[in-house]
Image (cartoon, rainbow, N blue to C red; front, side, top):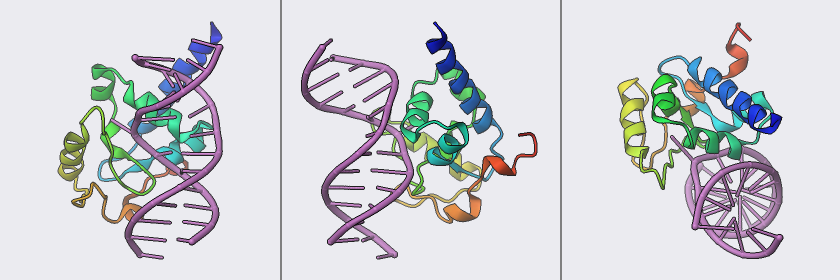
Length: 114
DNA sequence: CTGTTGACGCTCT
DNA sequence: TAGAGCGCCAACA
């Protein structure tokens, strides 16, 4: 069914967009969602259902909430994301809060390969 | 089929 | 400025 294909297309699009996020920069689910005309909930869900090879292919750790907070809750990979972000030069507060979010916030429109 | 949950965002206080 | 509540839709039980 085209429904599954449409879902896969959106998934691939999100992965491609996240893959274009430069190092030291972070983007939010809302930004990606608006760019892909998909609700933030779906973006988060899609990223949550990513396979292990998919997560290794895309910098999912560079995607945080609009408030710059990290919340992996169930999967428990928040600690891993915080470590990866810090490894890329992104400072994360004690409450999983990215410091200077607006300063490192990346936007799809900046990409000339639109 | 119904009810609850969830990598969230926005609005009100 | 920070904190709490409501709404959105898809997946899961």
